Image (cartoon, rainbow, N blue to C red; front, top):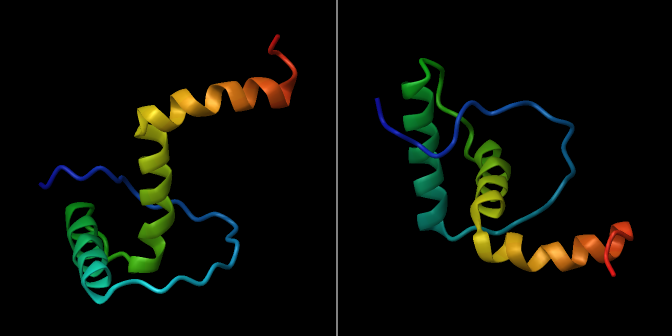
Length: 81
């Protein structure tokens, strides 16, 4: 079994966004979806369904982003100085 950063893809109510992807990125998303499906004994995952979880994972694990958004969140929720 391959150790991927993404787990099973959960269905959620979507917001429509249009994005142009470089061909090589699309091919890699297709391949990733095939590996993810194979590893979870499911059919291949549609590459479009990978984009959101990948972005969520990226944002959740970006320490610089987490550190820089703290002052913004504090100011918005009124808990700051």
